[in-house]
Picture (tube, rainbow over the protein chains, first blue to last red):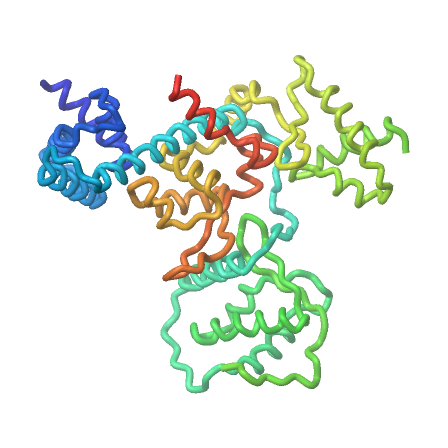
Length: 247
Length: 177
């Protein structure tokens, strides 16, 4: 019996979720997927879950959820009995889901095979020395880069600073623009943030940056692979700025 | 510019380029509009490199051309580096990648529904490895992010475009047999 137990541990860890387990049971018992003997399947599924419990494995809630779905189908079938009804077979949605999953599983195997071949080919790598535009840059990448900056800032230990004055976007824009080198070299936004004291100021600085980008006073770059934001000074702020509608 | 010249220029550009080189990119540099000529030069290089005794090859990938080591060289490169430099994706990662590749753009709840289990951790790995990217938000309750595959995905899997993914129908045919 020991070997059976062992193989069980092995296989439970290898299941990619309840659908994978169901698929395994169906294939192992050579059940007809279009006419699944649901009572047998539920019993087997339940015994697997029980074994997992016996082995003190943490069972993902998805497995329990699937068990409830199975029991629900079983109940429906038992109530219906052998009567012919026009109602949809209660098994159909689950069967569809299992078949869809099986398809994905095969495609995943196929992808893995392709990757085995082509994943091991190498060409000149971008060493990240130069600052490159990430292609098709979008708002999510700026958000992600800023998120990384926030994480980095948190690492620095600093006593909480209670700011008396609420930071002002307009003032911050002027200060940020003055901070940037005028020689049009990319400057890390992070270095500017280091001069700030509170998280409210950091957020304001971010909004100021976006505003400067919108007005065309600075250009931004994101270092590929590093998700760092760099700013390049382009031109002074327009004199007749109107800040209506901002905070 | 004759073919010989084009071939040598391309060879040089292929070596320095960090992304698959595209014909319209090259044409933009030279402004000569000779698409046929450049295509011919590419084919010439392709034949030139893809001989048995070469360790390098020209690969058509991500709608461009890439100079790369041959797959057969992987073992030696690994030994040279004394470590595995290829990222080994988990089974779950391949599943999620397959779901995204064939159904993009797609949200995490939709991916979870197909797999029947949560996929958050795998998504994070795939984002880190730049196999997928966020391409928008779905206009449903909660506005979840939409994910799609990247150019890096095409390169790593040696695909010229998403059309080159293994066909779903082929599997259905197999089942029918």
